[in-house]
Image (cartoon, rainbow, N blue to C red; front, side, top):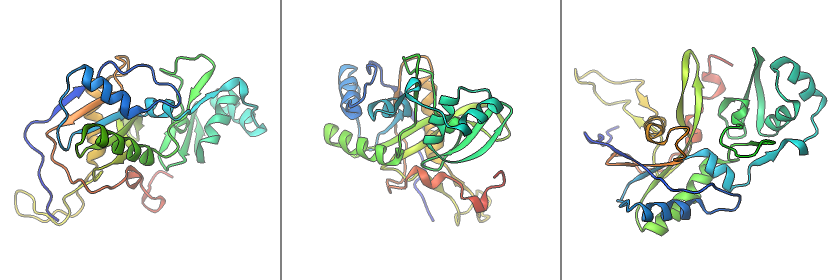
Length: 256
């Protein structure tokens, strides 16, 4: 299968000035207003990379720990992973299943199929001491809604990637990856093409949505208060392939 090749130059712009997001906020409108304020020109095909935190906040995914009564299982698990049992109960509420509990780590599969420490639940950049923030319940659906609203506001065809930060098997450090996507094929599939020596490519299927999310994080950062970036001049297949397709099925998973 032939795919259009990316250009030689890709531009990534930080969208500054987005206020602290509250439940019920219109994320697309906040982004539109910030772009207008910063005189950012939006072009056909621009990709908006949006941190999962502001999407989750807008969707009311904040949970107050003092409102949680932990189960017996959560109390027992808290002694293994050294976490607040109420936090473990919140993790369980956002999980399909537990993968591992060891060495102080609670590894779980989220409701939408990503395997993450603590099921992606976070306390950083929440702004409230007694609260934790769950991930969006369905990030692909969230991305689709935001994309459609952005397209109406800007009157352009656009793509949206919702990103979050994860560790990686066998590698130290973390990178951002796509947990939600709309308006873009999350893969760049080279299988069936020829390499530069005319040999058939059999397995090369690039997770381009993850690469875009990681690249965007370089201008977003973790302490800058910049939850949105715009990727320009990147050539991609606009076929709507959701981020959940990036989740490896159990039959192909060597680690579960």
